[in-house]
Amino acid sequence: MKKALISTIEAITNFDGSTGFRIAQVENENNIFEVAEGLYWIDCNDDVVADLYYFDTSENVILPTPSKPQSNDPATKLKNFLIANPDISAIIG
Image 1 (spheres, rainbow, N blue to C red):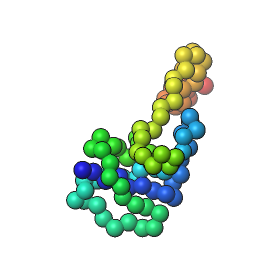
Image 2: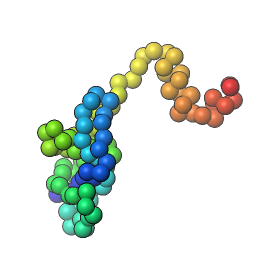
Image 3: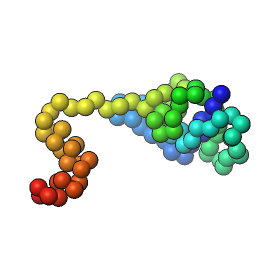
Image 4: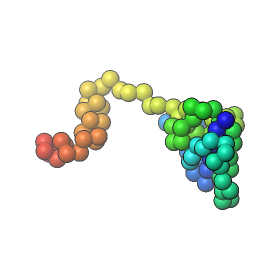
């Protein structure tokens, strides 16, 4: 069994409007440690990964962070490519 470290000081809002708290760390149950105020451990599935999952406060469950759908618009694809590859955008100005 694993434990997820929930950070109540790091509220998140996903692109779809779902809200919750960041999962800051995931550890095996025998590796957990005392944490500061605003942090707490909860049981989680073995496949949970910090920052790829979040603690949904409306249902009090751990869920995968929703992925924003990719646009098929060529201009958006080019913009995203240039943002992800700043060296190329500097070359083509």
